[in-house]
Length: 121
Image 1 (cartoon, helix red, strand yellow):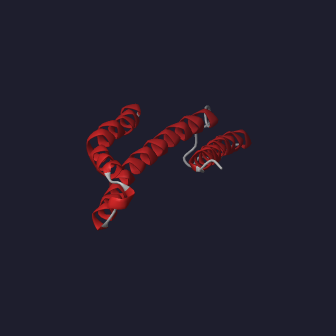
Image 2: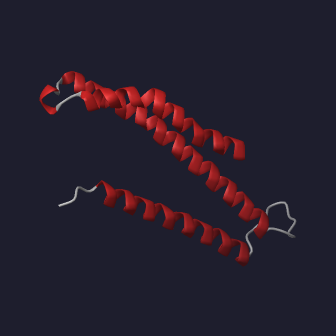
Image 3: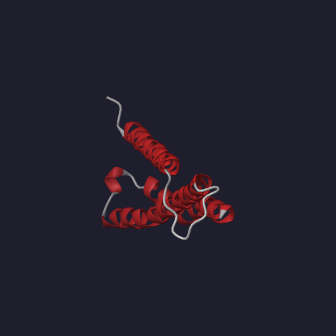
């Protein structure tokens, strides 16, 4: 599992350098007065290329979350053996806490990104 996570995280680097950077350079080299339909096509292409980066990052986060939840479930059910396990109050509390932590991290990250992308006045 750790190898898949590492592969997903590292794959973003060559994709950015060899897949997205040439389009970035072409867009950055275009002046505002030279923008035309070709510039629009480059922006659409960049959007599609960048969605691959976003997907890879999202998959890495999901793999990590899945790994963490499996670990916490193992801890929560340690010592309990049954065919259809049910959460003890402690196990449920641990999983709820993990979900709250990840949700809090997500909101903090979104807040940080929104604030950093706003132009200064």
